[in-house]
Amino acid sequence: MAKPELVPIPPQPLDRFRALLGDAYEEIERVAVRAREAFAGRAIWHVNSTARGGGVAELLQSMLPYVRSAGVDTRWAVLRESAEFFRLTKRIHNRLHGNDGDGGPLGEEERALYESTLRRSGEELARLCQRGDVIYLHDPQTAGLVPIAKRAGLKVVWRCHVGVDRPEETARSAWDFLRPYVAQADALVFSRRQYLWEGLDESKLWLMPPVIDPFSPKNRELGPETVEAILKEVGLALPAETKVVIQVSRWDRLKDPLGALALLDGHLPDPAVHLVLAGPEASGVADDPEGQRVLAEASAAWQGMAPEHRGRAHLFALPMDDLEENAAMVNALQRRADVILQKSLAEGFGLTVAEAMWKRRPVVASGVGGIKDQVADGETGILVSDPRDLAGFGAAIEAILGDPAR
Ligand code: UDP
Image (tube, rainbow, N blue to C red; front, side):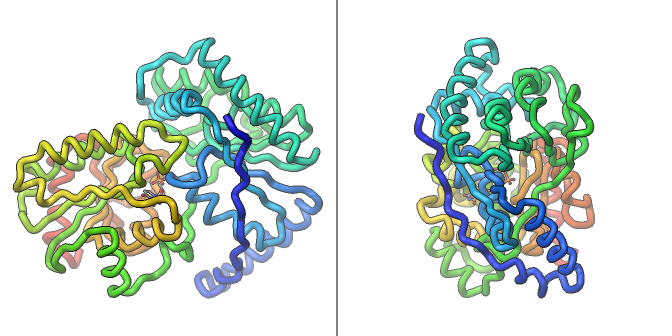
């Protein structure tokens, strides 16, 4: 609908990792030298579909500044397409998670919309890039750019941040839709071995889990007074003795906010236990057209709760106009949590889980997708194998709240 937006990437000093990693930091320096040589005279263009909200934006926001500071010319372009296009790509996203989403089709009409939309943005990107540059495309929204970028003489990487443990017909239908494009890429990156698709050239495949940045505003250390001051701004004022269970997520049905609220009704009977659901203000994430509706559903479910449960549930749509402020709010909420919940029905790889663990918060999460690689069940958190098992979530949360030493 509009030309891709270029997001500024202010460099961040790589050597801040020295204090954190000790001798292992030397490896980073070595890689930086190799990267500088390998990419001399070329740029790496990352392309995705939102600059804010969600894991991919988080990853690019925090990692690209280090690539810059390593001396590699890195750029970031964000697609700005129509609501219709993002409805379609959200359908593909849901299907890649094995979920029917809005139930709409993926046929020839959808392919025509997908291709004509991306043709315009692809031509614009091709104008910006130089032959020999690397274009690094993220997720289904960008897959259709692969052939256009190849024709423009670019090296093309396509990275898929979404996947499902046991693909069924639904996920396969999304693969079939995207495969003609992604098969043309020079390299393909998936988060986990289980997520690799059938029918792709094995020699092009790479596995790379996502990462978080310990120095970002979302993860940096905050003292208790700062946490308290930020929570006041968010609007969460609870006595210190109140036990708080917190889930931070986009408003997405696959994050199951309604299931989380339902925990208060019979599965977390202790009146001193409160539940917080926090996510971006619904208009804040351009490529996620369902956000507004899911937030409305969660608010309606909250309204409909019995008063004694409703008083223990808190929904926050966090402002997104200032990303640093949003990150500080997420940081403070995660640090205030006695338990961090991630009740996803499907999850490629939960950055929120890694963020919680970095802050030494106990995690209770669905044993689905990438979360199974992140949390060692019973050791670094508790996994509930059936994500709809409310009694199981209630018991796991109570087990942690009842045994702080654990
Ligand atoms: N997030 C945020 N503000 C919000 C809600 C979420 O910054 O209001 C961030 C969250 O902290 C995490 C990312 O969005 O860094 C979500 O990544 P995850 O991998 O958990 O899920 P995704 O949104 O990619 O499905």
